[in-house]
Length: 167
Image (tube, rainbow, N blue to C red; front, side, top):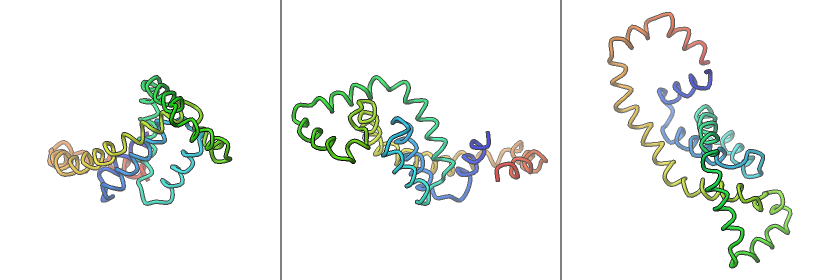
């Protein structure tokens, strides 16, 4: 519940839409791949050290982790076809004989397939999430704030509790 409150605050705040969009994209990459992998450690470091909205990152990670279960067969077959491609056998063999190749665990079909699918989705998710935040702020947020019910809620004790609980 606290994460949802922080996400709503981020969308309604003055955070730049690109900060939220990059956070959603990083969360998508991490959510679509198995968790304990080297590239996810890199994604987590990027999310922590670059100015992104961490609540949006965590929420999108949880969302895409749930979605990943539905797409596991697709990602598994993508990974298998990538690893079994005859033209790439020398590249994979050379890569997996290095320490980085062994640590990356890209020899697992679900890992390489999930990473490939998430990287294919980056050009769609990044501008799409940016556009959703911008459109929400431009259209929906103004409309909701004009409602009489929302003005009453903002003036209520519940809103003060909501604002203090989210910090």
